[in-house]
Structures are given as structure tokens and as C-alpha cells.
Amino acid sequence: MTIRLFDTMAGAVRDFVPLVPGKVGIYTCGPTVYSQAHVGNFRAFIFGDLLSRYLRYRGYQVTWVMNVTDIDDRIIKGANREGITIGELSEKYRKLLVADMETLGIRTPDVMPKATENIAQQVQLIQILLEKGHAYRTDDGSYFFRISSWPEYGRLARIDPEGMRVGERVEADEYGKDDVRDFALWKGPKPGEPSWDTAIGPGRPGWHIECSAMSMRYLGESFDIHTGGIDLIFPHHTDEIAQSEAATGKKFVNYWLHNAFLQLGTQKMAKSTGNIERVAEIVGRGVSRRALRLALMSAHYRSPLSFGEDSLQAASSAIERLDALMLALAAYRNDCPDDSTLPALLEATRGAFETALDDDLNISPALAALFDLVREVNRRLDARVLSTADAARTAAFIRDLDRVLEIAPEAETSLDADLQRLLDERAAARTARDWAASDRLRVALAERGILVEDTRDGQRWRRTD
Ligand code: AMP
Ligand code: ZN
Image (tube, rainbow, N blue to C red):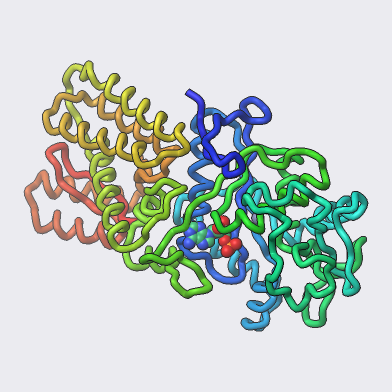
């Protein structure tokens, strides 16, 4: 079956056809690193991760690019506030971003370009726009995109350029522009602000131009998929399209995918309202990082996601069920013939999982297929109708689906020697019915992050994360 994706430009679900067979280029608008990202931001990045993971699972060779905005007004203000340079500020928050991404199991994007490392590409794009009559310079050395030169402006956001932005407050530093609707490509130099000396004069890039320049640098003038939160449809993505297509004369992006907001209570989670929670705080409260990932992933990306204790609780208990099953499968031994109906059960699960995700990444039925399997396999383990090989086959199957979800516990086959020795001693103590020693060793292992459980197949262990 073909994968179908909801394209904001078309306003409809479309069959996914890559520009180059077998390959997919994806660009995700990354964060502005002026403070620590909140879990609402991570909903957007986990969506990019899920999309690229699923396309990889489906056999595509994916290039996933996610930029880091490391120059804008908020960065300059933040650096002044903290008394450090913009480079120090953005690097500090970029590192925290990468650490949180790792916590959440977000695969590192293939490229994570910084705006300040792509100044030449942005300047070049502005030069082309100048040559083609789509841009102009103002007295203070700023450059603007001339909206009246681009009749297609606004299609993505379904706005009529004729009526837009009139009456909108004009930024103090944008008084010089010819038309109130025009947007900044480049900001002229100002005292106390960082500035680059370039072929179009000194100054710094605007926000929109960086995404056009970096996406086209790494994915080509036309590429497959661009993602971001719905707040980016206008003006950011609308402006990206205008800049890119006016410069190249080619279609910029084939599929525009936008995620809905994560809400805390009834409000969008946003730094501006202070209504935020961060990854480290939540994990610090003892929520497993995989439960947090699942909670952030569990609603369809185009539906608002209500975040809170209830969603974390539900995700935590789902993760516990999955962990318990993976543990049981690893320890299970039964010397009996294979269960002849297991292959059909696994096939049906895969079919339901793929059908759901093919349908515009419909995550709920995909997760339901996995957790229905968990329940059914638990039943078969209890009834001891599965063989040792069946258990291994089922674990491998779940790990295969987990290439997309990344919520299963890490497969661990070996422990370091000290921990293994403690486990062996505990097994020996149990054989000798020395319960006091066995309990003491259980505590010693727990202190080292190893949780031991006793089952009829012997003791088994997992890491507490
Ligand atoms: P920013 O750092 O504000 O540019 O945001 C980075 C990404 O996070 C953008 O794609 C935003 O659309 C997205 N984003 C911000 N807040 C939320 C939220 N509450 N829910 C979902 N996505 C969000
Ligand atoms: Zn962007």
C-alpha cells in the first residue's frame, strides 16, 4: 500500500510519491536556541522523528535535516540578559536540546545546520532575489522581500496578499520598507547587535531566509517534505515558499506537514505565557523517558494533544506492560513444538500497524495493534503454548516494529562483570534457599540500577531508567 500524507498546501491527504524513487528529503524547522525547549517543541521534533523513522522502516533512504536558529532578536536579548556572547548562549541551549532529544529517543537528524554557519548561502539567495526584482534594500542596510512581485504569495496559508498585513503594527526597525506587507530578508547593522560583513553589506539574516537557504543547501531546490508546527504556516513557511520559488522558479516543497499543538490544560504550551514543562523536569520526577516519548507521540500529529498527569500515567502503564512482556519473553523457556498460529498473529499485527501508519501516520491504531499483541502473547505465555523459539521470534518482531516507535526497553544480553557476579551469587543463594542473602543481593543490585524479579523461569533483571 502507498503511504498517504496530509499536505497543508493541497488541504487534503495525498499519496506519497518521492521526487527520486527510494529516497526522501525531510526538513523540520528546529528551535530557536535562546532558552531550553519545552515538551511542546518536542512534540514537533518527535513528529519529525516518527515520520523519518517510518519512512526508513518502509525502505526509503531518508535524509532528515533539522536546523538550529542561533541568531534572532530573542538570542541577542538572551545573551545580553545572561551576560555572554550569542555564540555561547546558543551553544549552551543547543547542547541541552541535543541531550533532551537523546532522552526522548529522537534519532539524531542527518544534518543539524546552524543559521550562523550558513550566512553565505543566505546572502547568495538574497542576491538572486535582488537580481530578479523580488527584493530591495532600505536606507539602513536592511533588505525586504517585495510581496507585490510575487502574485502566488499566501497560497499555503490561504490568505489573499491584497488584504493582508494592512493595519498591522510596523516594527520600529522596519519603517523604511516600501509596503507594510513586505518581510525582512536581512537586517541592517545596529549598535550592540552582532553583524556579518557580506557582499550585500553588513548586518544579520532574517529568520525566514535561513530555512530557505539551509533546506535547499542540504536537500536541493525542490525536496519532498517540510514539517513544523501549525503556527509556522504563516508567516514563516509562507515566506519560505515565496523566497525559494521566486529565486529558483521551481516548486520548493512537495508535501507540507504541520503538527497541532501540545496543550497544557486548555492552552497551547508556550514560552511566552510561561505555561511550560521541560523534559528534564518530567524525567526528574521519575517518569520514564520512554513513557514521556510515548505520551508525546500518542495522539495523531494533526490533533491537539492534551498533556498532563493523566497522559503520563497512561503512557507509563503501557510502557510497564511492554517491559514486562519483553522481560518475560527473554526469560521464557518451553521445550514444546512451535505455536502454529503465531506467524499469522504476527503478520496480522504488522498489517494493522502498517495500514494505520500508511494512513497519514495514524498512530493510535498502530499502538493499539502492538498492545493487542502484548495482551495476546501474555495469554499464550501463561497458557505455555509458545515454544522457546516462539518467544524469541515474538521479541524480535516487537523490536522490528520498535524501529518506528522507539519505546521498547533496550535489549541487553550482557552485563558488566561485577553486576553479573552479583546476579550469579543471588541465583546461587536462591538455590541454597538462603533468602536473607538473596534479599541482600537484590538490594545491592537495585542500588546499581538493576531490578531483579523472580519467575518460574528463574530470576530475571532489567535496568531501571
Ligand atoms: P520555536 O523554537 O518557537 O521556533 O519552535 C520550534 C518548533 O516547536 C516549531 O515547529 C513550533 O511550531 C513548535 N511548537 C512550539 N510550541 C508548540 C506546542 N505547544 N505544541 C506543538 N509544537 C509546538
Ligand atoms: Zn523554519
